[in-house]
Length: 571
Image 1 (cartoon, rainbow, N blue to C red):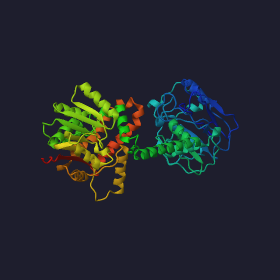
Image 2 (cartoon, one colour):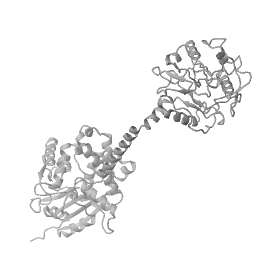
Image 3 (spheres, rainbow, N blue to C red):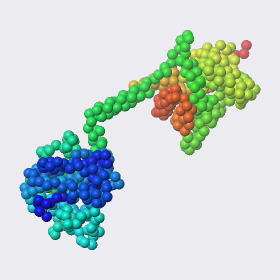
Image 4 (cartoon, rainbow, N blue to C red):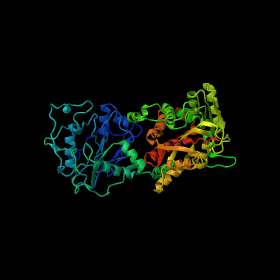
């Protein structure tokens, strides 16, 4: 092989698309660049061979340069492995006598088969000659293939008797595919074609990462300015192009800022109470909220007829609260409260203060068929729903009335049993609440009620505890909570109650908070069908979890209180 006739083999698996032909040029040569279309490259082997022949350029420039004009955005058809291209080789090469197009492939194609391609030793030898007779240093020699090797068999489409069909050289040539560190260089070569200065940088980055088939050609820095092998990685090139676009960066920054703003808004909104207690001549927030909860049906759907926590005994807690029926736990609570109250079975009149939609009232009416059960609520929607359910269930001894628990307008000494579950939390005057229940209770009668309480002070609440309490007050329209001990003092202060007792059922009831969340997770469809209730439901779910944590850490307690009314002295 002589310098004037030498040329480098041309591989056919170029990473291009059918709609974007590849232009190959010897920049130092005055000859017109030849354009080779994708149809020629991917055509039959004979057509590809002819394309190879047409790519030869003769001349005697002062340097050797090869570059590509188009960085493809899609991988070559029917090829799965990466394709490598020599991108640039510039600076004057002593001993170089002709301009050459340096394009080759390291993937499976009709002319190249990676390290086993019999033409690769020829390519290395041609590089050696082009460098003035110096071997490419630092590369392991690749033995010439024997005639018995499969890759040495003649290939269809190659014309015999041409210089480009020469066999392997006599002496083993170094492999240009051996992995070498990327040689330092300056950006002194010609600019990339089509005005794309980023392609060269991309190629250098890919070359320095050490791709499987080699990184640099290993040409000594003293003899060449740059030798780069780039991988045809369309995904990486597309990502780099997108990320380097200023408009894309601006849009990305705007999107990130928007997401952060939304997250900040959510955090603030979900930690700021939005349903604070308020009351006036024409409005009461407790009434408004319970009317809304009753009308949307979501609370009744999940909690059933009983708007209060459930009871979980020790064995059920050990087995896992989710194994218990959520609604049954509420019925169990009524049974346990009734048992704890010590009320006699001979009672004939029962008052349920803050009855909700009447679930407990109807249950007590069924347990005491000879008694009359009266349920009162400040919510007209609850009273209407409770009356509807009593009629539907055939419970004639249960009735429901719209009344304020702080001024019930019943005569003194009217009921054998005064009962309440989780209504004291909404009372703006706890003392008046206790006094009214004691007033309407018959002498010898039983008062029993359950209510959420905050812990006793001192010690004073920390700023974090105060913040939590303020949220729990304001999110579910509670004026304030008091301690179990304070309720005992209020009951004793009436002067008409005796045998005052209290207990804390936090262990028996705390599972209800998270159990309530899980029943919504297991069956979300009523909420899904009511988009207008999504935000409120999310807030309620957050509040349920915060309630659980407050009870779990001891900030909140579940108060159980009972007493007997003193008998009237005989005349």
